[in-house]
Image (cartoon, rainbow, N blue to C red; front, side, top):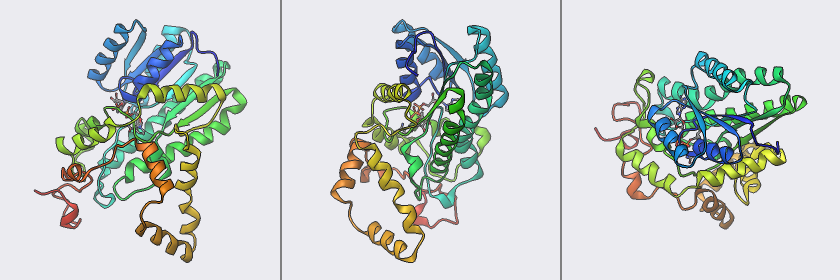
Length: 329
Ligand SMILES: NC(=O)c1ccc[n+]([C@@H]2O[C@H](COP(=O)([O-])OP(=O)(O)OC[C@H]3O[C@@H](n4cnc5c(N)ncnc54)[C@H](O)[C@@H]3O)[C@@H](O)[C@H]2O)c1
């Protein structure tokens, strides 16, 4: 996709962080931008942000886990602009961290419901409408560099993102004949408000198995504060839309990062490989790994003081987890 003027762009999670940056850059290029977001406060702030810049956007309150709400939002866009969007950007996402073995159903239902379910719902809502319209278009999802890895405290998030990446790849293959481009955006650290999500988690998901409080989320905020500017990230997405690239790992050495992240899989297949993985885990990072880590995280690392907040621990009452991995009561 090379022409953006007057195209209708629908962005989930567009009222904050990564999605706000995408809305800004697409609106600047002349797109008629629709921001769909769950958080009323973020929507109000986004409306003010775009008014101040004289960039018109239309906002819709939408919970991406609500399929009927998605259909109603799609109908609203068609009524407003006369056709379904040309560009869909599925960015809404949340995260929360803690020991995998402490996870509750609520942790999975919330994180996977928004980060994976929100992408599925966006695809099932809009792809048939785009195909029927027969005018091509573009579908992007904001995934994460976390899609390439797994970790003892990232289970729901990493699983949702790995699945979302795989899903987008399938759609990339399937939608080519319709002239619909597809891409997956996989940033690491970005300067956004995502630290706030776990504090605003809807009550319907029940208790988390993880230790989450103002202190742990301040630590996440500090790490993200060092991250990439969402506007810079949005420029990388637009470049990929223009050159038809499927995968955006928005760093100079992005391809090498992916290669190294996936190198673990063949090693898991044999006892010798498992031995190599164990040795690697015990060894310090190589110079190259350090360089790539710095490029991705931009200095955003958890310091011992931040870890003292109890970030990454289980909730105090998760009694099947050893005490050292639990928050203090
Ligand atoms: N911040 C990072 O370091 C980082 C890194 C990699 C990937 N990401 C991904 O970027 C995406 C955007 O996150 P962000 O960092 O900009 O966070 P953010 O909190 O600043 O923005 C996310 C937006 O999504 C909205 N949202 C949350 N739940 C929703 C729901 N159920 N329905 C509709 N909207 C909902 C929030 O209200 C918010 O406005 C997420 O998918 C996240 O996983 C972020």
